[in-house]
Image 1 (tube, helix red, strand yellow):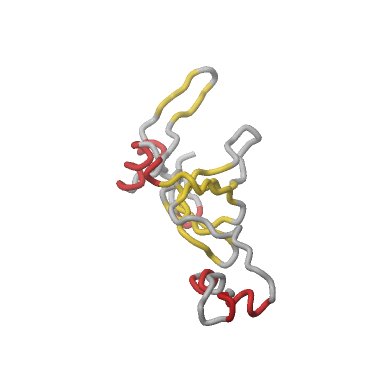
Image 2: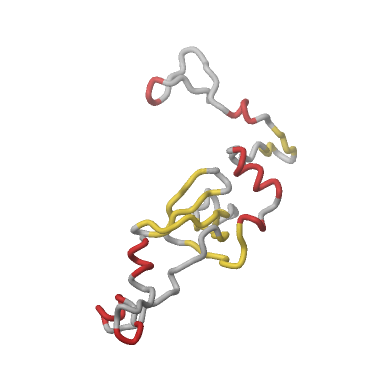
Length: 146
């Protein structure tokens, strides 16, 4: 990706301080796809239902051939996405203390609240993991709890 940026940067090696891109194509480069490293970005996600969130808050890390590389604040791992909205004025330092600590400690943000009827039930994270139950097998010979 560094070649992408270098080819759009003016150089004294070319006449009239043109960019290598401009010398090759005859057109001025378009800078709208360049974004500030570490800025806040919102990646489009496919909602589970029509009322679910449609974007995921991320931190911009760089470029990949078919989109952008982002750090997902929700899942605490890198993701690649094409449909992204950038806020080039907000950065990691602008995140809340809770979001920063979850990134730095490696703890993913998990929703541990379920709703049954009109009652909200908060479960510890470890109870949401599959538990062993004799006689019920799932894919890859793992025993699943339904």
